[in-house]
Picture 1 (tube, rainbow, N blue to C red):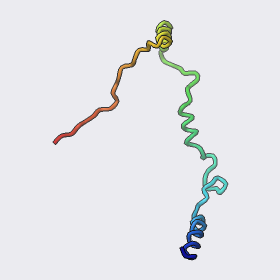
Picture 2: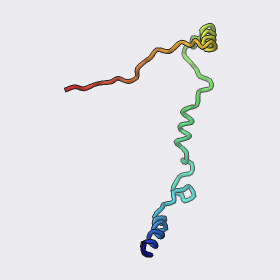
Picture 3: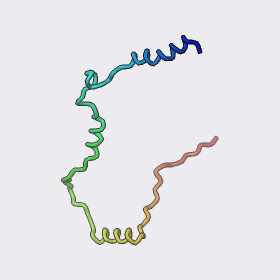
Picture 4: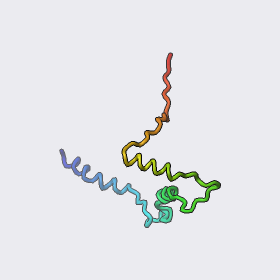
Length: 93
């Protein structure tokens, strides 16, 4: 390899680094208050209302819950119905 090619290969990263743009809050191009907004919105969407108000009270049964716990403890859990969420379509000529 000749010295011109070697010099070009060594200088290329330095030349390309000059094309880089600094996007940082300290550079003033990013609003620091908006930084991480997507994460904050996601966390806010996951928060459960600590004091929900329902129009009608939810029906519960202690006996039903106790039976479910007993089935779980004895490894006799009822298997849920299998529901297909996709359909397959085949085309023909």
